[in-house]
Amino acid sequence: WGPDTLGAYRTEFSRLARKLAAPSSDPWGGAAAPAVPTSSPGIDKTPPIVFDTTPPGASFGSVKTAPRTAYARGQQVSLQFWSAHPNNNLRTNGTYLRVQRQVNGAWVDVAWDSDQSTAFTWTRSSVADSYVTITWDIPAAAAPGTYRVLHHGTSKSLFGALTEFTGTSPAFTVS
Image (cartoon, rainbow, N blue to C red):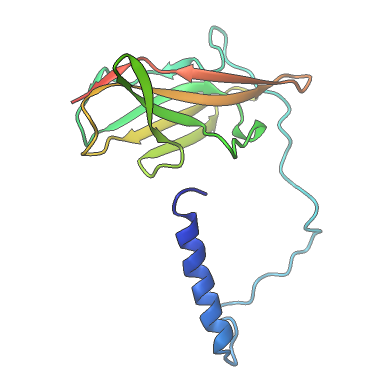
């Protein structure tokens, strides 16, 4: 899901419309027919998220691996935050990450998780501990200045309570 979803839908629907308009004796185009589900489609087999924790001395949203202090345009920023399972809150009207630039003393968003220049990877590191790795490919046209990365998440306690958190990286410069 993201800014290219509409284009992907248009491409696929156009292909399907052409197939429907000109049916052939082989409706699958030489490919194997789709498998018939063997279980009820209404049953979710995804294991439930029982609870989230962090290692001793860490908290949700704290930086696990900090970014370097300086980058050049065209390089990749990579950092990690202690986090929680992303399925606790799918953030359908929000974002898991924001890249911000400091402008006249205020932080201004320049990239989100839906941008092609960013990547968000969740990793379980123990039974209930996890972290996220965030990367940002700095565009060649990025304005020089001071930047930071924010990570938004939701942790789940053993008793099921959900708690929002935000982690903020140390600032770094782009030149």
